[in-house]
Image (cartoon, rainbow, N blue to C red; front, side):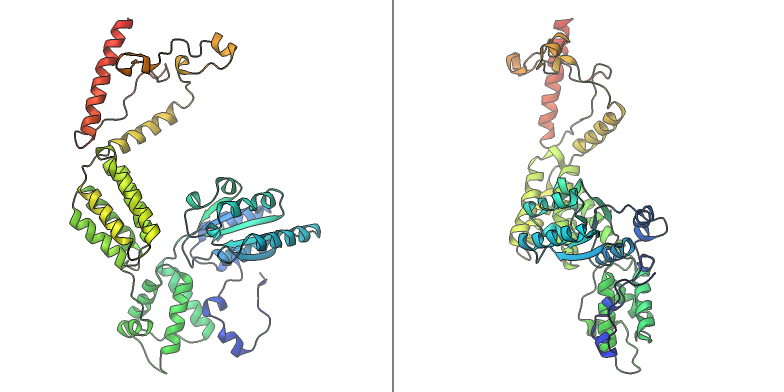
Length: 440
């Protein structure tokens, strides 16, 4: 395939001034590494292009995984005009100009592929401005984000685009990029095998970063010099992430933190939290994990846990680093010392299974409203008893579909606040049996 984005002829000096990552930018989808689920022979994008029907997409993935490159290649493969903007530097005025130019281009028979980098940086109103031009086909939108689209993008925009996830590059992919760089420059990277592995660890799954680091090493190495790990650390002045080169460390440490909190060991939990801070983990990722722990492992045993975890995440978002890290540490200690219960988690999973198995059953008619005369004649709302008018504000009616009968999903633990919840449930169960006898 012809490189549709090849630069004009340049002198050797001009070429070497371009960053190595830019000079090695793939010219066809087959050259993209680490994203075979999208760009491989059976990849989602490969199939889209083959079908001749490329839809709006949002690329979600870490930095340096190929989002911009793939967007350019899609435009080339489909013959669309490629236009790129960044949400960091673009406002409403620039968007209007881009949309108007795209309309003029479409009138001349060519659609525009608009690539929006950091699309999550646009506010809700700016995101809404894309809807008309996406809806009428003025542009084909390709957005890129490192943040979860479900949280950062409007539902209306998400409903018009397909989210495709890009994966962090594995060590073998980073080594492949280093080999390509050596072929381009015609010389081997002047490092030992272990130092080469260290560079991939420092890149931490980022293809652009590994090439930038390699370029620094090439510049610093003296003729005939072979650099070992210590020499590479000294040159790059960049602390290697605590996560190992197989990326298992990231998942191992968050797993250790979660299990320490679940196991009510505040000291171990604080240790793993500190290790992840020290390794450069995104603090908001840690905040989100603490929120999950509050729901999954504490639940209603201490209803305050979720509130405190959310407050800590918001506090970090407000204060930033390093001041906000203390709020996350405080929440971590609170969760580790809170009473534990997964009863809400287990109940929710059981209810989801039941909903899938019994999703076609209608609620009993007596608890349905009857806004029309016909529905009233059909028995909707007949026999419903308003709980606030009943003794103890409890009617004891059955709310499950008749074909199911009563189900029990939630079994509160005898710990923390759930002990009080169990007393309430036992009391209501007793009243329900008594009311049932009265109606028999």
